[in-house]
Length: 77
Length: 247
Figure 1 (cartoon, each protein chain N blue to C red):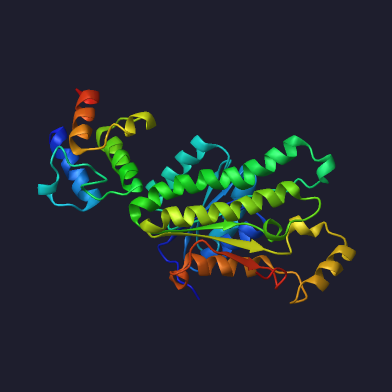
Figure 2: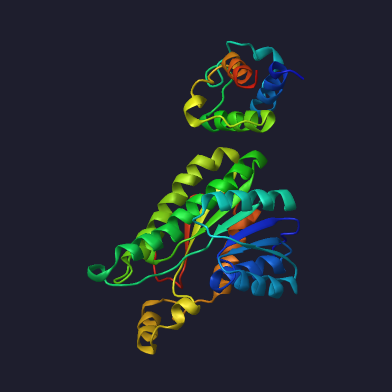
C-alpha cells in the first residue's frame, strides 16, 4: 500500500469518517471534526505505521490530509 | 465481590504498605497485577507472596524515570494486552518544619509523589486512549486537603495530585478514561507506625469513626473506582478517613 492509501486508512479508522470525505484539502479539525486529542492520536498512528518520529514542532504542519501525505512523503521519500 | 478477571492493573509503589494491600485485593479478585517498585528485593518478595493467591508480575523501576517508565508500560501492554487500571500509589515523606526544610527534601517529595504520577499517567493514557477505556486512581492524602504542620512538601505534592486528577479527568473523559483520587486519612502502615501513642490518641479523638483505618479500607475504595460500579464518577477525590475531613 502506498503512503497516500495508508494515510487515508488511518484517518478513516481514527476519525470514523467516510473515504469520500478524505480529500487533500480536508482539514482534520474543521472538516473531519477531529478534537485536539484526535490530532495527537493521528500523529502517533502515523509514527507507528511509518516507523518515524514526528517532532512536536512539525505537528502543526499537518493540518490537512494533503499536508500529512506531503509531509510523510517528504520524510520517507 | 468485584470480578477483575482478565483485567490488568498497574500499581506503583506496590511492594509495601497501602500499595501492597491494594495489589493483594485486586489479585484476590482475579486481576493480573503489575507491581512496580524501586527495590528488586522488595518487588520479588511482594510478587512471591501475591503469586500464592493469583496473578502478579514484578517490575523494578523508578516512577521519576520517564524513559524507563515508557519502556515498562509498553512491556506491560505487550505482555498482557493492555492496561485497564493505573494506580499511582508510589509516595514518600520527608517531614520537617518549613523553617528547617531542605530544598532537596522538598524536591524529592514533589518528584516522586507528583512528577512520578504525571509520568506514569502519561504513559498509561497513551494506551488507554487507544483502547477507549481505563481508570486511573491517584493515591493522594487528607494532608493534601487539610494541610499539616511539618509536612509542607508532602501536602503540596498531594494537593497538587488532587488538582492534577481533576485536569486529567477533564482531558481524558472523551476517551472514556476516568481519573479519580483517593485521599487516605490515618491508616495503619509503616509510615504511621512511628507515631507516638499520644499522637495516635489525639488523632483518634479527631476522627468521627474513632479509629485509624486499615490499608484494606483504602484498597476497597480503589476497587470501587476501578470497577464499572463507579462508571459515572470522574475527577473526584474520595477521602477514606473515618470522617476526618468532610467537604
